[in-house]
Amino acid sequence: MNTSYTRIDAEEIPNWACYNDNRIAVIDSLQNFDSVKVVKMGFYMLVLCLKGDASFYINDQLYTINPRNLLLCHPNIMLEIDKVSDDIEFRCVCMTPDYVKQLISFFGEAWNARLYFDRNPILLLEDNEIASFCLYFDLIGSRLESPPFQHQKEVIDSLVMAFLYEFSSVVTRYVTINPPDFSSAENLFREFIELLSSESPKKRFVKYYAEKLNVTPKYLSSVCKSISGHTALDLINQYVVKDILYALKKKESSIKDIAYGLDFPNLSFFGKYVKKHLGMSPRMYREKMYKDDE
Image (tube, rainbow, N blue to C red):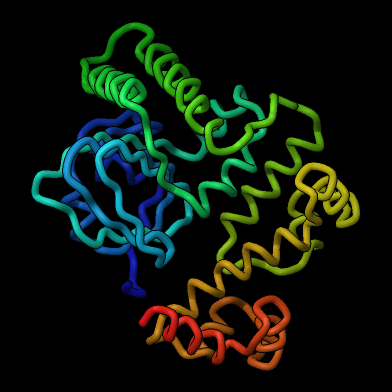
């Protein structure tokens, strides 16, 4: 996978879509994405494969979608199209993070679903779900494409909301979505996860995130523990280790470059951190990764 990439932020969706309203967009061709090879996503993207197949690298992990597969990509992942069959047919919808945040509050706390999709971004749909999703995608696209009309925004929002309700039913086959809880603690936890996932490079100190969120480190960690079963530091380390694993797969990047690129003060500190969380030195772990891939 390449190290250079093009970042596509939410406001740039119009340049990549066949029609949009700056919050949601429909894409009917992979040509633009293929031309830039590696994309750092600034938005959510759902791709439903109807015919043919396509393979993608997501954070350097190879995935293949076949008919009946739904691929979910969230902001800040690295996406590279590997291969696309000539007979590919799909539906694709993109949504800005702010728009999803506005709508998702109706569906309860989906942080555990997000963690699940980090590891399993492809869902297998049933025939009735495919038919239903295609209707939503096509109808949303037609409303976006149509000339302006009264209550156009509200109509589109209602269609997207209905789609998300059906989508959430599919997700519950794979992971439990907790009932809505609008407490200050739940809101704080959601904001922490959003902040943590968007940081690049990620800070490794609870104090940094607590100050950003205007709470004490002790309170932030307590909230994280009560909601997720993990302390704030545990969650920070999980995300940092994921970035380290992604970086170590880049053969052209030296250990020194990786350490400084991830904001470690020196090689020694980076080596100790990696050994603590991965059980061996960065160099040894990289060699193990290469050997496992052979």
